[in-house]
Length: 417
Image (cartoon, rainbow, N blue to C red):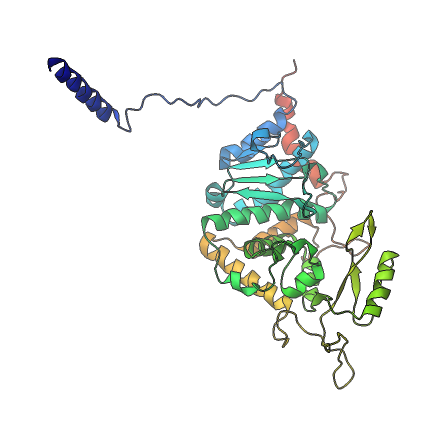
């Protein structure tokens, strides 16, 4: 009995010791390594390592991982790292076209609060063999953005640069924002009848515009529609954006009731690789293949008034009657739907983040393109906006040369072994 009492007293003492030790100010030294190791000045990558530390990690607590992180990569894809030079290009453009814009327009505190904590750069694309699509980026849990295909970055091609990188960055960043504060639930109801999660990649651009989407991918689901509306509005130049809205005033559809003889003629032209368009705007897109050859085609046509057999029914004056696929009474067009969505995005960003999307767009556009003294886009001989990044100045330099200097200047601090 005496022995039992001793054991009980020992247990009470141990429990008391444990309870008294559970204080926030008495935890002892951390088990984690918190030492701030200096960058290795002998490494070839030291200039870029220093640039990303100074411009991303220190001000915004963001780890910019341009050396492929195997443990942080999607193992469902065969991925490769990006070359150093391309990583330099993407890093300086990231600062110039994204972080600097948000800092100047929305503020440092906004970036410190909502900036991703990790950005992972992948050199190769992420192909999905099942759907035939390419993953351009991901936003994970409001903390991490992964960008793919960085090896194909070309500053002299702004359309490609925006489509594969900066539209993707604004897209993924917008996901992070709505993962923090939900976007308006009413947005889900605007185009609910047209979302196609499984087959969005088969929706031609013209059809998507007519339905009120700024891109094919926007037609996949509401949350992608929301961020695609934001991202496309920011990066598309004023001419391209106006053309998109103009195209959205006319609706197109995938034809399912084409007369058999007409279908055969169209299909035959398709198989021969010939372009085809008739008075009501038929054209075709690549369809199913066999042995590497197209064996059947999808016909896309303008959405007009037709009879039960699929033939055009003109008005009393013999004119074709164009309809809106959004509303058969032609009350609302794809253009009006896109602008309605944009207004909803604009109000949500301003209300919740004091984020002026029009000011952000203006800043991005003026960093990407050359404008004249009247604030009009300067066009080249082919009528395309002049690229401000690669425009050759009178002294023979370009803006890209200047941006890359932000990294190259750290070369003077390197140590040669």
